[in-house]
Length: 296
Image 1: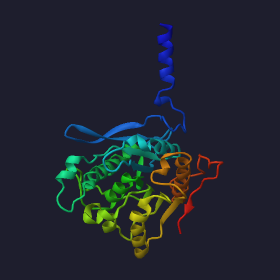
Image 2: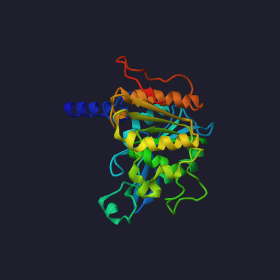
Image 3: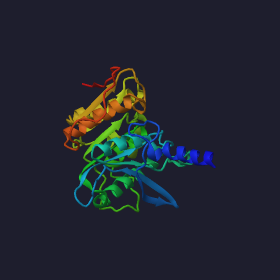
Image 4: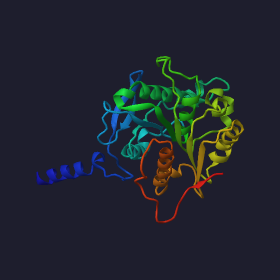
């Protein structure tokens, strides 16, 4: 009996709900909401709130992040660490489960269509839900930031700029535009040009909001996907996009330390300049000297 009680106590102490701040492997759970239901399957959003946040007293900036995984894998927990940090700094931070493409989707696509398109309606639904429930969440709808990693970065861009690919059950009076972006190696591709609905360049306009974008210098998506977008931004006169490079790093470098914290520090300073955060980042740069380089 004593052994059983000891085992239970140890299990409770070391469960994810009791993880300490900064723990890479575990995290304190956020509050899970269902933002839509499709064929009996819940699409969920996990939201982290600042300590003591009272939605009835004031509204604060919000950030909604979409995980990567090649449009067919991954989970919302991938951005729990970042959401927990943004919440600790004074934002309502959400990480989202969205529909992933399948082999059947690939087979069902018409000529010229990309199966990436199946992910985008859920991204739009999630943003609309976030806005619709802004009063309940205590979110300022004029200061919502979107972003994500890899495929999640791609669908966050399309979900906020492409007027199409809407879920017919969504309210058509709620738009999906956002005020700014935090993008971790967004997976844009030249192959997207075959399907206008998934091609960010087709929807990029001169009023594109401020953004911070992170890439490893050895990431193929930087040259093959982001470079054309950067060129179009330049032609449109967009100057509010801050690209930071991690020298020698490859795709998804931000998922490991010390880059996980380094990118968060840079994102914190970016959001601070926009007036969304106050004070200095609460994370520390590594003593080993790694840093991001601003792309000119």
